[in-house]
Length: 275
Image (spheres, rainbow, N blue to C red):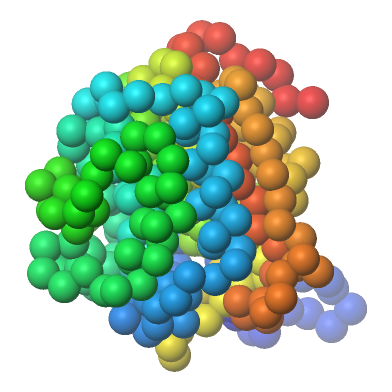
């Protein structure tokens, strides 16, 4: 985890100090290594990602009853993860992949338009077993025709701009400040049009993580924190969790599981109070 300890020069004997949160702007995102991250996370389909895909597919197809009539989808902070974009594919004429780190933007452009690793077909096979996904014979060609990759921050998203959205392992993994985490979630949801469906995944109880030689912060959220955060901006929400003890082989040290939240964006002015 990024060192958030106070400057020793500002400390006095007998006086307690509080560590300043590590903000998104403190992180060296220009040094994020997407190729390293891909090989550690997505070079093969893990059981936990398999479960997240099943839940997302079933939510989109059955509970939310989506059909292929959404104009513009958004995936926030994909890094080197294409499976949220694959989950959006049947429902969108256009999909924007928006990432802040320039190395990720460059990597995504190459992955979508040039190489497309074999493991993405493993992810696709989970989705393609049902519904609208069955209609796509070649997911690589389908994405290539619809995806645009842009550089940009979650905090600078336009409001009421997209018809469907995903955000996987972003809001809790770009800061150690709980307020900044909530702002990222709210900005993502508010970038959708009223009633637009979304899926967002979070690392539960994350204490920070490493990508190659770089350390990055996290907010240690749980299902109650996710529910409270979404209560003010979304409705028809469903929250599921994969506990760490259910995972055969943990992804890394320093987290307690994975959370998937789905729902729809509330209408402006219609906000449900957090409880």
